[in-house]
Image (cartoon, rainbow, N blue to C red; front, side):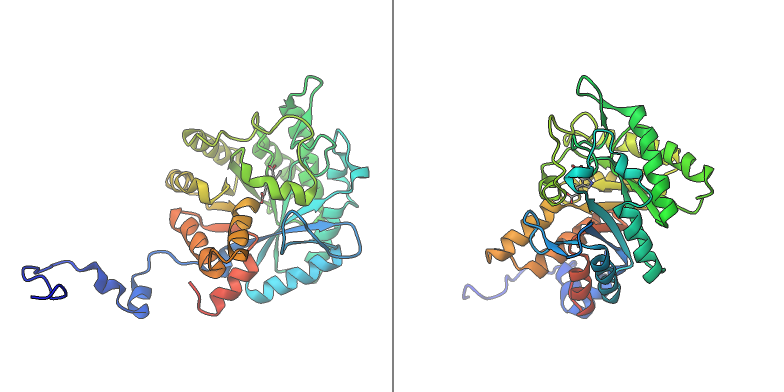
Length: 337
Ligand code: PBG
């Protein structure tokens, strides 16, 4: 007997490898699918005339209003039907009360109108939170003692949401983590007849190191303190389930978990608890970890991106926000997985 002879006593009843023997068989047995129509593309915009590179996030741009309209067109051609907008607000417009957030002629309303008039079929999602507009760099109003004021913030978030709905946003996405904002925004939208405008709630948004590059892209780093009194402790899961129950009761249409990759267990448990659709946000730091490793030649970018997104779907996310959206869609169209 040589060392490569088959072992003599192996009447194996189960050979799981049979279900992996060819791509055709693997396709039949595949439990999770990834497709472009589950991806949402986050886009940075600014008030300037030209599209700008973003030092903190190579390969992403800060689009002008004209530029973002074109980029949304390209993304649609790749199969992406939904975008979410994040504004880089010039320093001179940032104030302690973030009033620019509900300026009807502001950057976000302008961009929403421009995108919807050129591409009426695209789903435009807008972010509700004060950080891009706040001279303090916080998602809420900062009180005299440095604490983030909850109920006062919720009142202004309602103004911001209404301003976005009037501009034509399809989905309002509060990312601020104040208590009670989903119910308050729902009430404000309904009171102006925007009963068709959806709320995608950042339900379980953790106080994460992985948001660093995003804050660089918007220049929205908190000026003092951190976001731990409103964003969740990364150590907690039951708290995510509690937030899910509250957002569901307050009328959220979609529940989001953020970040995605380090929180797959949270996605899974939220998925099991709610009948609402679940979204997950593959955030800027997750994006750049893959980008940096690929640029160093350490990872195959295409394979790593598709695997990371498949993992998020497998955990239970119906939809994924990812900066890779158009690229992933193009790879999927080529038959990648
Ligand atoms: C702020 C907001 C953040 C992100 C989306 N909305 C950053 C933060 O909470 O500080 C992060 C997204 C990313 O990192 O890609 N309202």
